[in-house]
Length: 420
Image (cartoon, rainbow, N blue to C red; front, side, top):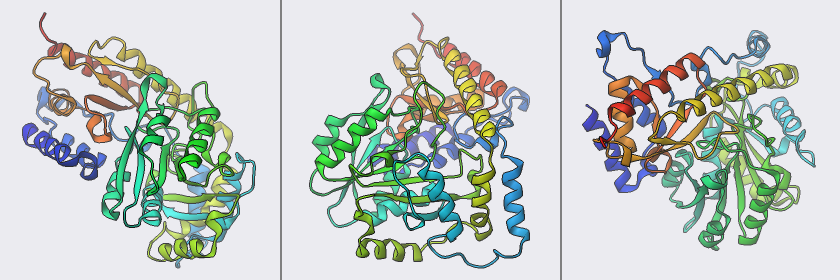
């Protein structure tokens, strides 16, 4: 099974990796490769591959958030269709929430509610697609962008993130790649898969670069505010007066409710480019095609945003800092894995695989499939996010499971160590 599965991934990578590879697809293949009879079936599976905090006992959705949805449902007022752009009260609440961190005020007209951030990604690519268009995407990044671009006929051009500079954008590469057909520069902040958080100064330089090359910025902020290092989270919309910004986000990560699929697509544009009648009409017509999240969940958004206490957010941040520390500490004892940058945000990190220290491991894909089979530990090969011979480890996990998983990875690496 392991050879067949890894061959599928290798074939997809060779024919153009990330336009066909998805994270969930690879994780499913890795799960199929688990040996259920390992150690007599007593070795539990430890998944450090999926960014779903609800799979752990460490992160909990606040009771008042659940009660807000329950109140909305049992009010019997929200069983019907919502407007295609979203319930007005939800859009007002999201506008007010996002405006707290901006030098200007968003209105409900700037907010469009989506079925999770994934739908917001697809909307942003679809809105910008035209014959000959290209889009600048980070490498490593989130493969849904490539997948959406492939469906829309938009050419993908990758710029590198620089691990030696805290995974900052290679702005020289952006300038070299952009041309008159570049429709957007995509950034992910806080970073998935790298765990980076961009400074105000770097975001300002990104805005100035985008303006200089004549494109807009799509800022994926699904991990917004999940920053636990030295740098605070700064939304890209702060620079909306420099360059138009489309901000994508959701309740999913910060409120620990990814299954509720409540996201947003936001036009941060004080100068009014996105408010031109033709642009507004195009966006609204496209949303007429879409199905948003359930009406009763949208109706709960004002109560959720207004009543969630800061202590809940702080506890989430403390837990992420703690589990990131566990991960980084354990990696120091694994000679064939190097962490070039300590994560400061989100729920995942990238580490580099030193294949020269390993025998019978050909690349990151081979590593992950053999690890799953031999140790029942799931991590994501870097190829899935555009970086061959790297690994993405999700540290949003129970500390005990995370520690045990890292020890199994160490044992695996020792077993496959090249004999000197």
